[in-house]
Image 1 (cartoon, rainbow, N blue to C red):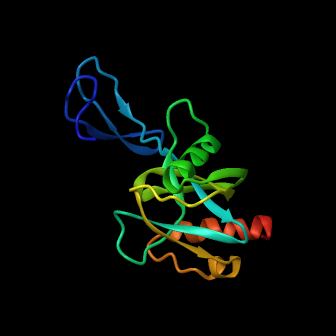
Image 2 (cartoon, rainbow, N blue to C red; image 1 turned 60 degrees about the vertical axis):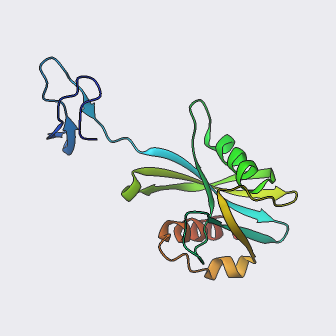
Length: 163
């Protein structure tokens, strides 16, 4: 953010509560950009005895990860992942178990991860280019490449729930 959303003045950096923040220097304007992270729900999908990894249409070939989506206004993260699973891969959700929350600083996001049991016939939306099914052992060893956070979520899943 470069300009104040209240008065359009150019924001300046100032230390507030020991953190550098963007603030408005405008007369009578007290806008502060607190930099609150955006909540994102993520799901490791269990489909029968395998796990689903998906490749977003905007990603390069061979890059797969979890299903994710931004938490909408008035939505709780569990509702978000159920909605995203339905929208992106056309599946219905059964048990939705919390794995953990993870800070993705680079994108200023708070990832709220779930283990989701899914059923139905896989029907990809235009957002998903392809998917792959992997066993639990394959998921444990999977190289997520640039998606290091996905590795942390999977490790936490298997450490916490020993699936």
